[in-house]
Image (cartoon, rainbow, N blue to C red; front, top):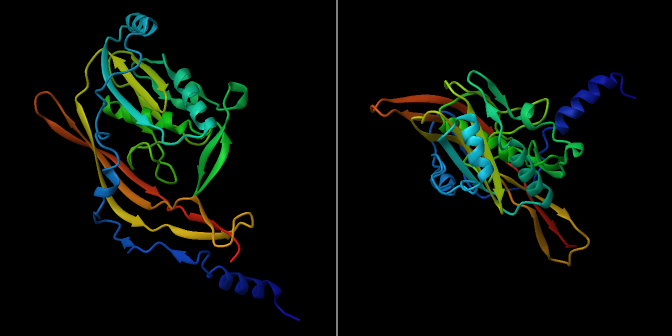
Amino acid sequence: MVKYPALFLLIFLTLFCQIPVYAVEKEKISIDKPEQEVYAEDIYQQFPDMDRSYEGPLPWEGDPLFQATLTKNNTPIKMAAYKATLHDPLPGEEYNVGLAASQLSGKVVQPGEIFSQNGAIGPYTSYRGYQAGPTYSGSNVTTTVGGGVCKIASLLYNVATFSNLKIVLRSPHSMTVPYVPPGQDATVFYGIKDIRFLNNTSGPVLIWSQKVDNSVYMAFYGQQSPPKVTWHHVVTKRLNYWIVERLNPALLPGEEKIMMPGQEGLVVRSWVTVEYPDGTVTSQKRGTSWYSAGPCIIEHGPR
């Protein structure tokens, strides 16, 4: 009989927790130099021209309601715009993004006012029309009511940045997202995480947003044109994903099915350059975003 059960339990847990929880790693050299730039061209090639304001057509430009709202609020100048594409969205996710975009459209931020997404269109509950959608939880993907509204937060973060408005609060996702570049995303969770910015201009700012098919558009309108703002990023660390294999008796012997692709972890340091009409260029730090790696989950039949 063990004389000191608490001590025995502590030793057992210490040894047990050192056992790795995965058996197979992605075959790639891990780079661990947190203050040194590492190769990242392959990452940002997936997001062409998303480091600057979107200059293409916007779906509401001919809408009489939109034109009337511009006149009513005296916000004739498009300050900045952004567009993001949703890749293979789930039904609830797509619905939630469209609902949030429509609820946000037409909001006005007065001079000196701090805008909050949660305050403007939250909480994201079934009572307010939201459905279950995918949500990051650490290195896992779960389902919660309102899942998907972070797309709106990410667009707000970018349009506010390109409008040269002051960012008050922003949190990155726990893992990278496929619709904006690493370092340019924002997540919200009502009561816990929010995206907030200050209208530091002398006039009101009108927000307009709309989802069309698998694309989400957003623009800010005001009384003055902002300087040219451009994103810059340095990836200082890349983390390998790992492989988790599990038995699925419903699959045939030797058959395999990828349930979730692996996701590389990143550490990204970001900043923006602000170029004024007189040629003056300034730099603004946007902090460091830490993204966890996510497992590649493979189910297989009997072996």
